[in-house]
Length: 76
Image (cartoon, rainbow, N blue to C red; front, side, top):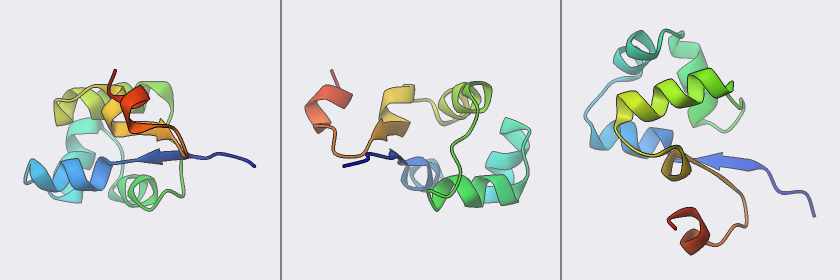
């Protein structure tokens, strides 16, 4: 069974009270890119991933994980 990369970008963005436009501006991508990431349609580059983590103030492992991975593994 193939496992895809999943993310919590939308949930964390909302916790931080940022709009998609605001996040896109801070990460230097388009709003359409943020939409695609949040809808699990696009896996961002390492650079964009690191920028997202920095702007959202959380570790990369909290933002992105492999589907089916145990949550304890992600938060270790």
